[in-house]
Image 1: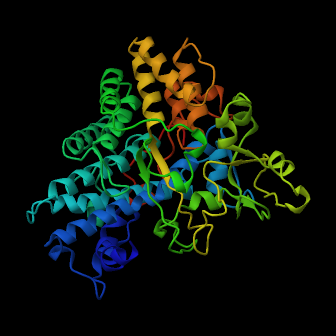
Image 2 (image 1 turned 60 degrees about the vertical axis):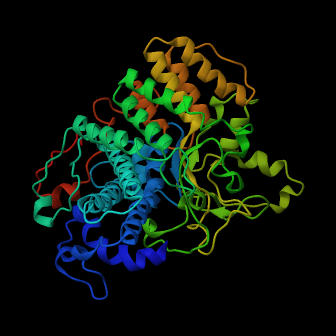
Image 3 (image 1 turned 180 degrees about the vertical axis):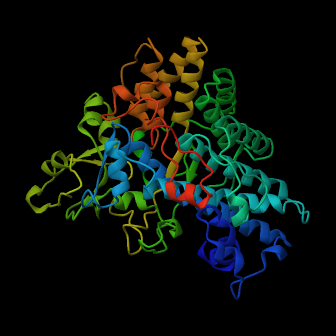
Length: 489
C-alpha cells in the first residue's frame, strides 16, 4: 500500500488532506515529482489508487477505540506516566478540554479521510469505465464512516461534500447541525448499499451488509427505532453472516474475516513504521500499546500498558462466562497458572495499573510484525461484528415494543457462550449484554451516553456537557473563530 501512497497520496492528496489544519503551504506549493491534481483521474487506475488513499485513513480508528473505552468505566489510560499521552489521561479523568492531542488527531484524521473521499466524488464524472459505480459506492461508505466518527464524538461538525476546500474557504464553513450530518450519512449509505456487492473478494472492502449495518447504527444513534430495526433485519435476513462457534477464536489473526465479520479494518505486520506518524502505519498500533510492559514470558509480547481494563469490568462478568478471560487478562492469575511462574516478569507503568490487560487486542507471540513491533501488529480491528448487529437490532426492536424479537436475539448471543439465558426486563439488560460481548472494542462510552445514564457509571461525568467532546481549540482558531465550542468547555 505504501507504493501507492508514495506515488499518489503523499504528494497529490497532501494538499487537501490537511484542510482543517490551516496549512496554506500545502495549498500553494506544487511539490516536485508529483502529479498535478487537476490532471489526475484520467484512468481507472487513478480512481482505484485514490480509493486506496480513502481507505488508508481507517488506520486512525485506534484513537476512537481508545477514547470510547478510556472515557467509560471499562478501562483506564495507563501508559508510562500520567504525562505520557496526556490527552488520554484527561479523558480518563473527565478533565479534558479543547486542548487535547488525541481529540485533535481524531478530528483531523477523519476530515483527512473525508477530503480524500470528496476528491474522488468531485471528479466522479471525468471518465467512464466498468466498475466505477462500485468505486463511488465504496467512497460514499467511507465518507459516511468518517462523518459518523465525527458526529458521534463532537455533535455538530462542518459538512463538506463532493469538493475540495481552500484555506480561505475553510474559515467560512460553519458547524452543521448534527441532524443534517446524519442525513448525509444516511444518504451516502443508502446509495452505497444499493450498489455494493453482498460479498467482496478483496478483504476489507465495503460490502452491502457493511453499509446497511452502519446505516442501522446511524439510525440507532438518532433513536430512529423503526428504521434501525428494519435495516438490521435486512442484514440478518440476508444470511450472509453468522456467529462463529467459539468466542475465544474471534480475535486471532488466524481466524480473521470469518462469518461474523461485517466490517474490519485490515492491518499488515509486514511493514515497519515510526512513532512520528501513527496515521502513516500499515500495522495496528493497539496491540503493542496495550501490551504488557517489559514482559518476558510465554504467549504474549511486551508492550506499553495502555488502555487497561478495570476491576469493575472484570467483576461484571460471571466467572463461568468465557468472554471474561478472552476480554480481560488477569496477569497475576495467568503467571500463577504457568509451569515456571518465577521465570516470568513484567513492569508496571506509572500511568496506572489495574492488574488487567486488554486480551482481545494485545501483542501475542506468533502475531508480531516487523520492528518497531509495537506499531506493526497484523491484528485487524473488528469495526462491526455480527454479534454487534444482533444486539443493536435487539435494542431497536425492544424500543419498538417487540420484546420477543429482542429476546431471541440476545438469546443467540448468550447461547453462543453457553451462558444461562436472561429475561429482558428493560433496555438496560441489552446494554449490559453489549458490555459483556463488546467490551474493549470501542462502544461502551457511546452506549452509556445513548442510554442516558453515563453519570451513574463514569466518575466525574457531568450531564449536559460530557455527552460530547470539545471541538479542538486550535481547529476553532484555524477556522477563523467562527465555530462555537460545545457546552461546558
